[in-house]
Length: 109
Image 1 (cartoon, helix red, strand yellow):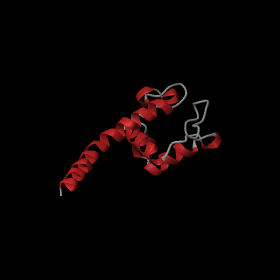
Image 2: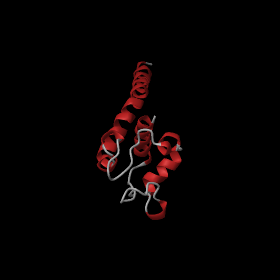
Image 3: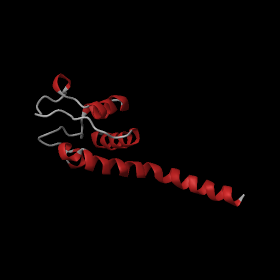
Image 4: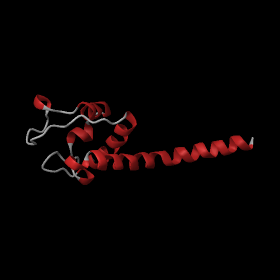
């Protein structure tokens, strides 16, 4: 019985801290993989658009944003023609992408 209580408490603690941890991981992943082009905190740069107020990020589905992250946007697929380079493909797993999207959507609000 005691073992189940301890396991239950551990599970509850993991659930309580998983959302903030996921957001923190998303921010760290963004900083490592995306900030060089999209700027710190998604403010944009001369190389890539900002996410603050970005309509695609704000209202786009997770599936559509995931597709851009996984497949990139180059050539005719480029949405923002004013930037010289396209969006390169990223090699992030599904959990990493989901956490990065959560951070980006927070900035887009």
